[in-house]
Image (cartoon, rainbow, N blue to C red):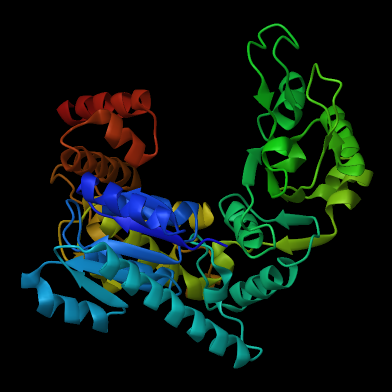
Length: 471
């Protein structure tokens, strides 16, 4: 199996030269030119080695090294540096870099360093396997997106993933929206024998009866009105690998029948074709609904349910794993630091208290979006409470009544306003919108995206606030 190398260099010509050279030497090579692109590449696939220039336009090799070693400890990092950076290079070795290469670059030196690194890594992994005990480590999961927590719920989830991943079982993932079911599905895939084959995700929530067959199985050119080209369906795209079907409970009864036949027979036909295509696909499905209740109501086929339910995993809500909230928050902050070229050190104690007290109805997805938003609004070394969304000033209803407390965030009220909830909410919303607009140079499209509202809603809020201020 070819070793995968990611080259990070903002000089495109150097990146291409290195890529061509290493490809000829039998490696599978990808190129990126910025720190932000590094994050995107690591999310998509697993790399054995990252060859990174220290000086980049939007970040530097040290930030990337720290991020990789924290989140992908089995990935080797080699830094490319200049003569004047030797002291820095030594510091990078202490932070976890395998080695450094000094410019100007010589192909044979690069190849020797890479081969030495991969050989050393192979020896270490072999030793680790021989000495392995029953302790489960998330480092073995080889999934860029999976974050391992320390709570009992997270450890149980990890054990279940490692138990089911090597098998060919079909899996049902249950859990509320935003808990990370697709991430769990991808982790299972990447730790299976199919890891080098496609992982295809499909959202079943918006499928209509007419669209479903084409999306699942594809169609030939001219198969129906509007079929102007051949379409490869999701089953065929995932052949040999894993097909993840999200929101499976939203499929209509008729679509379920069509899906059942494909699952049973392990064969499909594109619409308009007589040729059968053999399937070798592992299915992982997800739902935030209770399928047993849907079966009792006649909304979901029992035979299809049992086809899917060879093994089931419940992905816990974020509020059920309090110990993991700050772990996840720090992980997302490390990513945002690279994306935005910032050097935020962390969260103030007050912010940590707010994050832990909040009930997180949107789960991990909401936490990720909040961290991205407050990091954008932060111009300091530490994230402080004034950038938190207004809902963090609400009472923590997760706790028992006698333990509840309101975490009141700073609000700037006009002297002529009475201190009541209506005015406080308006003022907090106004301040939040204004801060975001300032941060994006009053680009309303970007501001609406950060605030998680559409542009029309943002315009209406601005007009409403302006009118209210004048009165």
